[in-house]
Length: 394
Image (tube, rainbow, N blue to C red):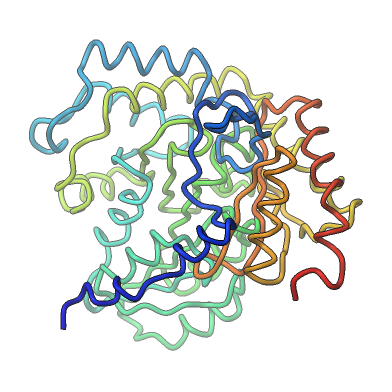
């Protein structure tokens, strides 16, 4: 039987489009500093972006990207190993290592490939990977591709992790994989306890800090937030959130980075990060260092929205990051809620399984103005009775 047979019977997306509730792949004709414009000319308050510091459209970042393209070209046309390495790449690695307090850094083309490199480059048959049940999909895929034995432990449950580590063969290689900040709930990992458990059982701890860097501890991320930079051997990050670009990096000891530089397949067999994206990330890092107010501001604005949404009756949870989820109970309720908010000029993310349980994922950025947040709250208020009514789409 052809493997494409499943495609013939796939109808979920088409049914949603036909019903007018489809919330994905929405086109934006423009984006700028907290707002976006739809092709029909409507402006929406962007409360669904990971552009936490507001740097993706910052003129300084855009100019740096344009200048790098003019100097080096649109792409590097090869892997870093062979012909695609630029001094610009090496320079960014040195800057990242210094800023985040690690001996060395390794630059990759996407955040997804970064996690693949860190996990599959170090783990293989005979090793054991223990991964938080809410860890990012790229970490899950990396664990599976490594051919190591994979176990999941309950979210942020270090007792469950300890039990599973205790059952492993004494001499087996072991890695524990977590997010620093979880992208759907906005909650932090219990890093002090994770460090303690990993030390006790001789496990290597990897923290994917995609949503922590640029935000927590004046931008230095989750490890710095807990004062544990030196206690975490491996950190991965992406430039597609706070750094307003794309790409990623692994931070760790020099010998580990040197090994991955010559053994990580997602680095060796992929074209290198474009000059534009590299320069954009480098300029964003410079701005982050010179303008630490951005990190403080994004947390302050998310806390404000979390309080205000809760006062309107929305179930928002208690995160510490720019991410404010709203529980919507089921899929149909999520889709209708998303469409109602779009009609009010508020853009959030509709999240459905298997990504996570049904919810609206809202997120906020440092350069949101008071007026923009007020307009967003007006939109949430306008649809509150429909969304929170007990009879709403059970």
